[in-house]
Length: 411
Image (cartoon, rainbow, N blue to C red; front, side, top):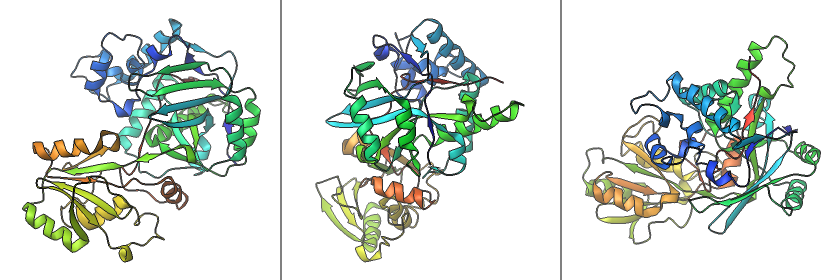
């Protein structure tokens, strides 16, 4: 039984939303954020990438970064650009981009359900990134960005979403990246609470470090509160939960800087021992079980033998796992893609032109264009309690930060 909770959302007004809202912290680098925030003193980048307001040589994990984030959040609230709702509510959030629309429910979920694996993960987290998100939350005493969750489709929840999204929205704007963001407040939050109780699980689509950080922040506040009851706001995790059918996973492509002391001809000869390799002008694999490979002499399609793929294994049947076990590790010597600096990951939103450019420029010796992981694969891996290889999924469009903030108690 999944628990969700209405919360007193801190939000911009319809007039301020486009000015305040920003990309999330994990899709924009510090340098990119500095440039994007020029002339935009009210951008939420000053909260999620607060190092942009400090000297360039500031350690991104310095305590001043988190203190500046808290100060900037307070300034946005004190100025009236962000306002806290007078009573707890649940919201509907729709993102539309290039004809694709996804509509989710904005509420708080229970940190205890992350501990009990009712909120399921499919990625490993890094301790340093967990530490970073935990400190950001605890110093701000706020969840500044929602976690991106999904769930297996529920007719009851879909009906509720359809009804509430037919009303007049609170917020409606198109961001500078072309994504339209629309927010409604639901009429009867209790109906959503009851509908989510019919679910057995929620699944993290994006935001594993934020989820882990929120759970750790909850545990820290619990330990600091001698009168802890379990009803405090710090026990919650702010999230947007989407029906699985609304979401589309894009490919997460790979590049490798060198061919592990092989010539290009030697490398291609080894690929032919892995599967069928044929030259192609199409840089996008057309089916699962295949990958397109870009080297200096052009594109090739590598098809793994179908009878060698165990479709009953939720991990080893993934194309990213097949590439890792059959090409990256044995041929290119990439043993741990989480730590090996020779490998890079390119979100599918950038397209195959980015891969062409990286190989042509010499920044990469080889690029791999992947077939996207499916939602069913993500859910099945999570249900099995398994962990996907790193960078297996890329979701678009991204949630906009600054539209929802959840404050919790200080101790």
